[in-house]
Image 1 (spheres, helix red, strand yellow):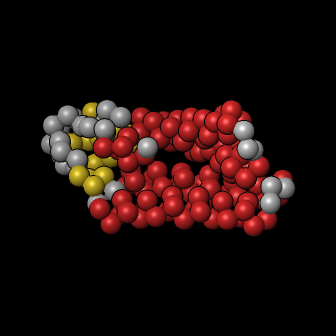
Image 2 (tube, helix red, strand yellow):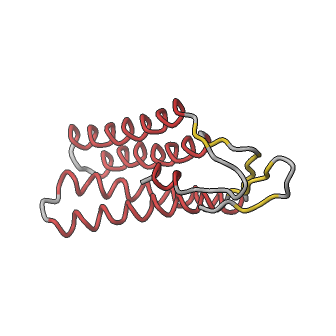
Length: 152
């Protein structure tokens, strides 16, 4: 979802490219942190301390993946961020920790479709909210032009 969202990002009057190695690092971070979270729950069970540990690894890891992906963008200008929206996106990332924990719990304990879908939907909404809030925090200052809002 994240990279597809990033590919849909545009700025009038400037082409956007992506640093491929850094984009791959972003992908690697997501794979590793989710793998670690699933491994923790799979090996240690679904007790509260285990779920909290797995969620605290997975949630911030997904947030890190997002910001590494944003950092991989390059264009003819500079990025600036609205501090209030950045803080809001970080708060949403905290919700992603709870959502990641719920999704990990559901993956390991719930065997019915509806509860699994609900847990997955919570995590999807949290990650999507973090992505679009973080992207809306960004303003692009093109070289030789006035600043403009990015189009997430």
